[in-house]
Length: 128
Image (cartoon, rainbow, N blue to C red; front, side):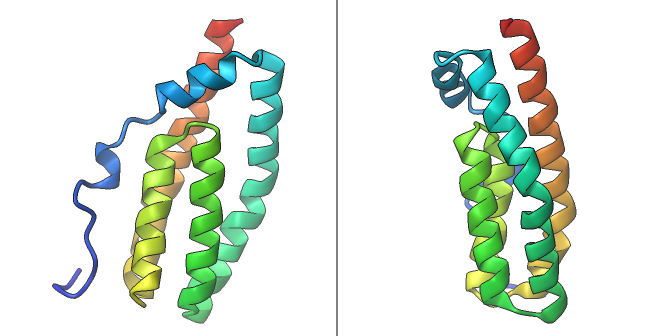
C-alpha cells in the first residue's frame, strides 16, 4: 500500500477472534438465541459478500463502503471481533477511495469471518 492509503493503528489481525464480552452477554440469552443469531448472520453473509465483490469489481468505493459497514456491524453484533476489524479496515479504505487496497484485503476478511464462526460454534458447543 502506498503512503496515502489509510492504515489502522493496530492491524485487524491484532484483534481477538471473538469479543468475549459480547459472547458472554449473548450467552445470557441461551444457546438457542445465539444459534439464531449465527444462523441469521450465515444467511446474510452470502449477500454481504456478493455486494462487496460487486462493488469491488465495479470500482465503486461507496458500494464497497456500504457492504463493509454492514458486515462490520453484523460481525460485531455476534462477537466476531477480528472479522469486524477487517470489515472496518475495508470500510476505511473505501472511504478513502482505495478500492484496489480494499480488494487486496478481502481474503483476510474471509479468513477472519471463518475463524470467528468456528470459534463461536465451538464456544456455543462448550456452553451447552
